[in-house]
Image (cartoon, rainbow, N blue to C red; front, side, top):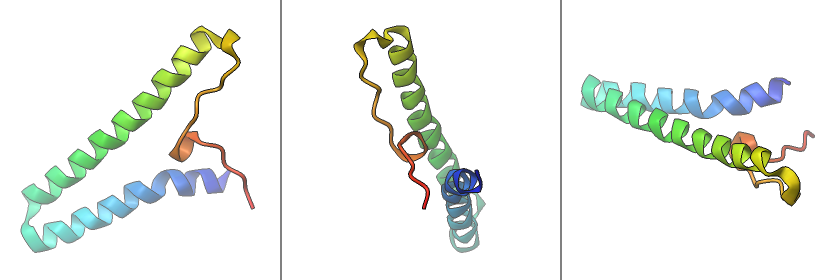
Length: 78
């Protein structure tokens, strides 16, 4: 369970760190725009995976489970 949260929050904290470094070097506005664009892309990717899941659930007779990437992909602990 902890591995899921670590994988889920890793990219958010990494981009937050990059945004803070950008804030120090180039200012608050570019850093805020950088982080906002990252969040927008992150949300779009999750919405794309949710749409694939929704389409599969609506017609699951096909038997083909949609491929996932990132947190939506298969994870084998160990």
